[in-house]
Image 1 (cartoon, rainbow over the protein chains, first blue to last red):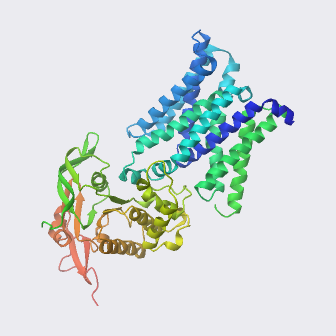
Image 2 (cartoon, helix red, strand yellow):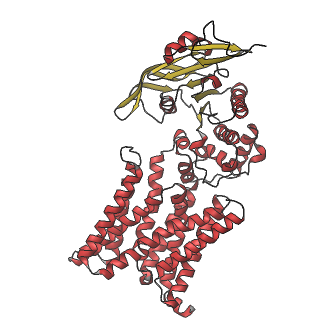
Image 3 (cartoon, rainbow over the protein chains, first blue to last red):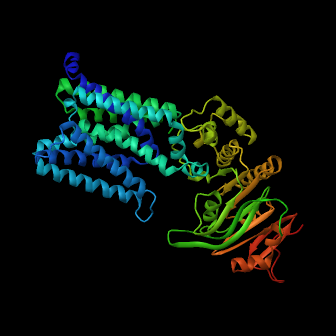
Length: 275
Length: 263
């Protein structure tokens, strides 16, 4: 079995990098209660990929990697700007803006794909193509995940403060809007590079489920981050290991393991008396 | 009555509001160095709006708010605004008050922790430093947030509804702590509250805000029956029992039984 998995080592390493980056960011996504920002950004990012596929099908070639990654990135940045601006305008409730972005981006993506290619491409668009990760994809993921993690280590206290108590942070001179924009940007960039390989469902899973597991098991912020990363990585590795020899779709297999780990964490949380 | 202490914050004909809506206008007053002031009014009257303008997080629509140079606020938000899902212990919450002094890209190290522990000691919670903030009682949470404000060595301590939802013992204890900090640390203190009876006996100056009306002055000048009745638009009675002022809505007649039995 190890031989078979080793054949897809780029895919495995790529998946682990997505799990690592998204699990760390997911702690903020869950604690700031912006889970649907993650969902909407993933959908917007996928619309960018769909646009690249559509453009490619009508002969506007941007290159497979640069086109899909570039447009996914641009769409996600647009989404981050949109959410940062609408988040401060009370006339449009934030959840409505998210819902709007989610459905419109989803519909645009499906329409573009429908005009560009067949249903098989549509499936890839939703589920991603984990096993199709190349060395180049993996290196891109490595560079982006490393950069995002370095930013988060260096700006940990700023992201923590403006997320936990923006009102107090404002009185001490922090621009919560600017810091929130930076936080969303790191989430958006990670989503944009992960989307092409992992698809909407798996990226959303890595942004939510490991963080939930971490919150159930960790007793402080460090513990939450460590448990989130550990459970994300274990889910990625186990799901991958199960899917290859048993010919299961990799993304859903990873999500199933993630869910099982969150369930086990919840039981442990209750048994421990924390609930 | 003008104070001989210098003004640290001055509102000059200020109008405040959001978008096209003006909530309060014509505000002109000063907060002086060493004041112990309560900003009191019913919910929705505009207390938070004045508070935000005072802190500098809401620019005035017109007029001018001037603050003394190097003025530093220690802000204590309503504890209910903090999300209890965050797995933070008391000392980590307190350390946040020093983050801006540490600077961007630098870690909050042992020194920040040491300062946080000292601040927790100062509010009487030294033994709860490693307790999870979400597991503390309302009064303990409030003390942690006061410690967080103190760690930044503020010149003005601002507390937003510090006793809201607390029992009598806890609220008395918190207001006692605030008054002690004012006396021992020489801080200018501003307490925002909607409970006039609770804060009236703890402060030297009162600012009352009701629908569009604003009044500020020494507590004994503001707390008169005529003034309160005029401000609130209903008859108001002010009694004094054991040296403490009590405010009642509605005025007692000669025939009515006393509000408080005298023994």
